[in-house]
Length: 90
Image (cartoon, rainbow, N blue to C red):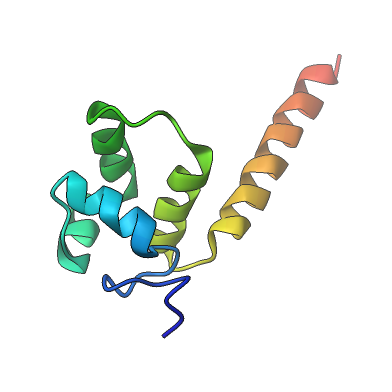
């Protein structure tokens, strides 16, 4: 297991630092992560006083989808660019 990509949760993108944040809001296992889901966990982090952070949001989403968070970042960029292009059309 690559500890930089997976911590004790055994989820992609959830390394020791993010795992510590999750434990701080009471998410202590993979089962809890899967039950709550990435969106709810991100909202719990915000409610706990953490500042909005696109990288953390993407890492959580990537963990949920079992893909590298950078794929999420690229997908977000394509969506943003698509929306801008749609607005430019007459």
